[in-house]
Length: 378
Image (cartoon, rainbow, N blue to C red; front, top):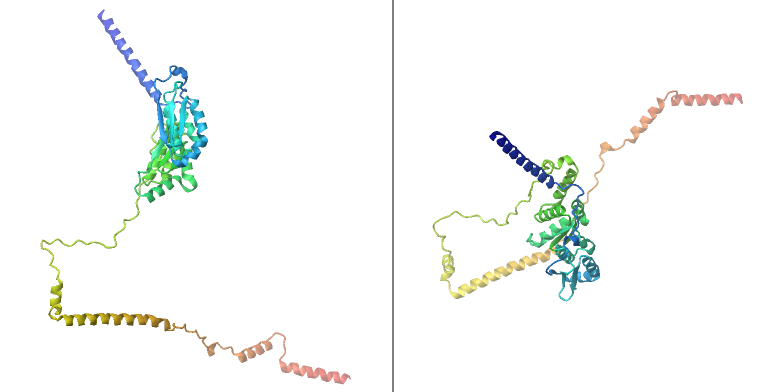
C-alpha cells in the first residue's frame, strides 16, 4: 500500500509544477501589448461615491499671456466643466487655479487640469493644451535655462533645436508624434509617453552640444525597424549609427607665454636705487645748478627733435609724387621692314610663269603685226 501512496505523492508534485510554467508563460505574454489595444475610459461607475476631499492647484503666468488667456478662458472652463473641475483666472495676481468639486469622480483629472494651466502659462495654444485631458496623452516641461552658463551659447543651441524656419522642430514632431513648443527657458512637449521620452533626450543632448540631426537620424532608423515584426524582439544596436564626438577646435594659445624660470634657492639680486644710479653716472656729485642745467638741455634736445620730426611730416605734403614713366614704343627694326621692291619683282616673275601667258616682248610684236594687217586691208 505504501508504493501507490508514493506514486500519488509524486503525481501531486508533478501537478504542482505545471501551474508555475503556465504562470511564467502568462507573464511573458503580458509584457507585450497587442496592437490597437486601448485602456478603457474611467467612468462614474468606477467611482460612484466621488472624492472625499477638495484638491486645488494654482500657477502663475507671465504678463504677455494675459490677453490670450482672457480670450480663451471661457473655452478652458467649458472643457474642465465636462470633467466637473472649476477654473478661475486672477488677472490682479496673474494666476490660474483649478479645483475639484463634489461631482468630480476621476481622482487623476485634477493632475491633468494642473498640467493644462501649466501648458497655457508656457505659451502652448489652447487647441493643443486641451489634449492633455485625454488618457493616452501626457506632457513634459523641460527646463533648459540652467543647462548652459553662457547666454550667447544658450541662444545658439536653442536656435539649433528649432532649426532654419522651424524645420528641425517639425521633423522631431513628426517622428515622435508630439507637439513641441520652445519658449524662453523651457521646452513644452505634449504627446504619447514614448514620444516624450525621445523629445527629452533630444533636447538635453542639444543643450550638451550634440546636434539634433544625429538623434533625428537614429529615430528615423528606429521607426523603420519597428515596422518589421521579426526585428521587434532583436537588438537594434547593429543598425543604429555610432557617432563619435570630435572636437577639432584647438585651444587658443595666449599671446604672452609665461616661461617658468629655473628654481634657485638664492633670492634675486636687489634692484639698484636712484642714489646708486646717480653714483654710477656721476650725477650725485654735481651741484644743484649743474643738475638743473643738464635737465634743461635734455628737455631742449627733446623739443628740437620733436620740432624737426613735425617739420618733416609737413614737408611731405609738398614733395611731388613720382610720376610713372611713359612706355616708349620701340622703333621697328630694319629686319622687320617690308621690302616693297622685292615684292614687285616677285609679282612680275609670277605673271611671266603663268600657264599659256606670252612674254611681254612677244605680246608687243603680235600687236604691231595685227595693226599692219589692218592697214593693208584698208
